Length: 183
Image (cartoon, rainbow, N blue to C red; front, side):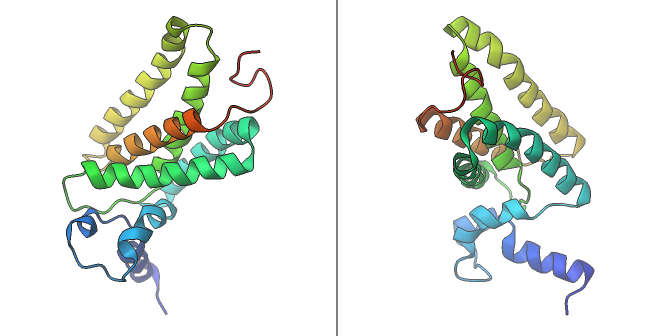
């Protein structure tokens, strides 16, 4: 039976996002290069990483589910997870593996930010309403990247954010009046 770090290493070996697998490295299992676009989001770098991501999921997820329902939330989350993996795979230059739900969480943030954008009466109001949140997300990434000595997967955050924004842009507008919609 696996214990402690052996189980952790096994899970990371099979489930983390390994960018080298997209560039010819040999996978551990045949479907690993495809599966890692999903599995990385269910693994975390430690208890604090998991707790922080789950608190963020609870806060953002409630907003998205309240506005769009559970099915649209699941679609946005899943596509943002894929977008986070795609962003990391395309933009990350090293061979370090990536884990965590942050790509999908940034997708939820991208979705909410698009809803805020659309709810404004004019382009100027949309820019004013969304710029502060966007600037905060950018600053958060810079500070965390420096604090973690480069150990932050900003590429996954960007990919997830863009995926969430695009899905929300394409998905039909629904939800109760007054919740990020013009009345």
